[in-house]
Amino acid sequence: MNKFLKTIIVFLALTFTTSVLAATPSERLGTCMIDTLNGKERKNLAKWIFLAISAHPEINIYSKATAENIDDSDKFVGKLITRMLTVDCPNELTLANKSDPLAINKAFELVGRVAMQELMSNQDTMQALTNYAKYTDQEKINALLSK
Image (tube, rainbow, N blue to C red; front, side):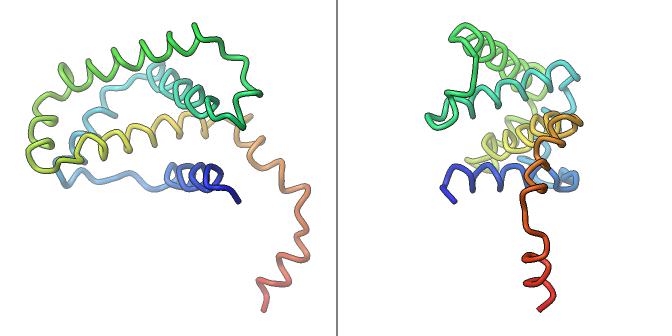
């Protein structure tokens, strides 16, 4: 399995984790950012992640996104992040930054999980993610698991 697919699988697995208790300043920043998102913003973040993933050379042939679509999505996310950090969560940002040089990265991991949950909560998406099962040999898998 190539590195890209492994990264996607790990990222998808993280989206199904339970909610994070905001114990550290980084977690409080991430929670604040998540709490400020409305449904439309979550969907637009999910779209932005999709567009970013579709930039991969082995995947971009399947995307119909135009340069304008991508730029519009980048603009939306840039403005959204600016608002979240400077208007919605400035105190959390300041405290997190003082306590951990990777605080912003950690907070964005939490926000990314929410965006992925937005994608994963769609019934059509979940169906597409499970379609492979009709091509698996369950007998072979179960034989190994029963050893």
